Length: 286
Image: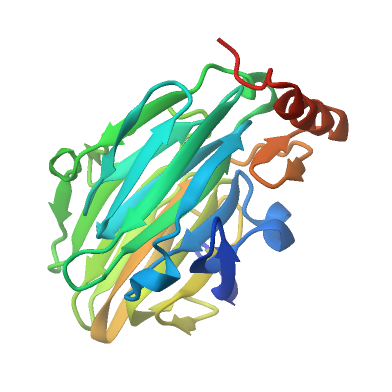
């Protein structure tokens, strides 16, 4: 029996418009809910035209989830109902646990060339922790370790670990791993994953061949998911131009999901209560 996880599917990101008119590419969301548990959504918001993103995401609520924003170029200014405010810059991460409820705003800005590149991932919270107090983890670029592989690759470790080096985001309930991997041409990358975890790679530069028995080639704005099971590692081989991808994994919750826009609970009754509290002005728990 092969010790490698099999490739289960390849998805292409699709254009959507969110917030006050931000044009972005949705990698997965509602339609793929059961396939990426504990993750709910992945957006690729890379853009070169400020007119397509500068209206941003005015103040909006979240409950029951975590949002993970990873910037490559440009910045995102943010503020929230708890009094927090700041800027996420290139190479930085904001890991926000919405918990029982938060209102926040995210306003993107391009660099001198108009580039605003980044990703936002939503992770579900377990039922018993849906209403935990909101909190932030602000991670500077200099806090993210970079590990060189034996074959010349480079791995930025945001969460989880690689080659014995752990990322700065720890003690997350779904035990996620979040790696930014760059490989030179024709180089292989092998990485162990936890049995039963959801595992996927999202390519955003170059292309690579994924898998062993079933091999799939994927390029920019393509997601490759790996089947769940006891197999202990994945294999990826960069093609002629090299490749850069996010490699993300996490422990599935296997819980019911009631999802309404920016709020994710376990039952329709809990969801209705959240929106009722929004209308009544009692959504934020002090």
